[in-house]
Length: 154
Image 1: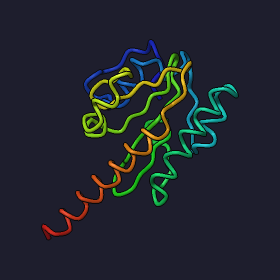
Image 2: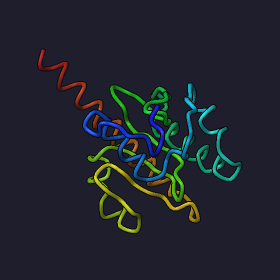
Image 3: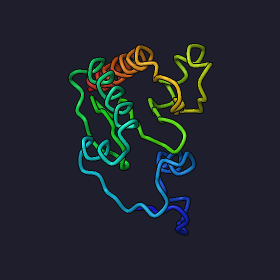
Image 4: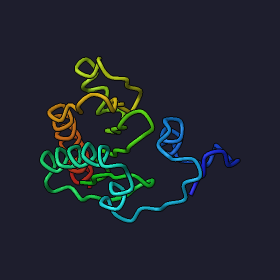
């Protein structure tokens, strides 16, 4: 696992890890490897755990058939490919619905700090769970459409 401050060949690190590193989603010196989402969430202080559980529940409600996994050492939901990732970072909750998930809701997300595939929800404000559900439902449809188009190409 990558440790902040360790020298690495930047060309071989996955882009999702680079985003997490730049956002402070790894604690300095952390070597912990999570096997389950419960384990990931339990590693944080109670207040952060509550936020992460609310986010997790909103995602489950929007994508009840999705599989919960740990990917790149953060929680993710998968249904015909990854739908979304999320992570607790130093100053925010990172929500990663891919670039299409951010682009589709760009206007509605204007009050949040966003980049190509990232939405940063500040820790001192409630996470907009209804917006999260809309984004997840969009990603479910997007992944289903991709899956169907691949099937029809055969």
